[in-house]
Length: 126
Image 1 (cartoon, helix red, strand yellow):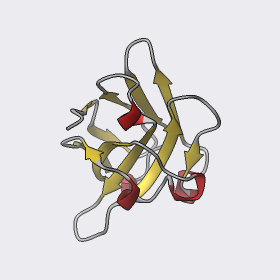
Image 2 (tube, helix red, strand yellow; image 1 turned 180 degrees about the horizontal axis):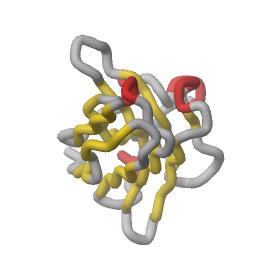
Image 3 (cartoon, helix red, strand yellow; image 1 turned 30 degrees about the vertical axis):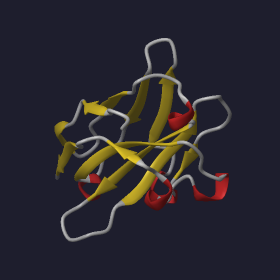
C-alpha cells in the first residue's frame, strides 16, 4: 500500500486558481510515475497530468490547454497540480495516483496506476 494524501481542493469562480498537493511516501519503486486524475459525477475517471519522479517532461491531457502545471518536490515527497484559468467543466473530484511504471503513451490512463489517494473536490462556479 502506498499512502497518498491530496489537499488543496475548494470552490472558486471561473478564471480562478487552485493548487492541489499530494503527499507521497517517498521516491520508491512504487512511485516512479505520479499522476493527477479527475472524475466528475456520471463520468469516467480521466487523466489530467503525469510526471516521472526521476524527472523529464510532464504529460498533460489535451483539455488542459496550458492552464495546469504538474510539479514535484522530491525533497518533500510532494507532487503538485497548479490549476489556473479554471472553468466550470473542471469541476470534479481530483485524485493523486502512483504507479511503479507506466509507459509514456499510457501515463494518463487510470488503469496504469496501482495506488490512489482519497481525492479532493474542486468546484468551479460560473
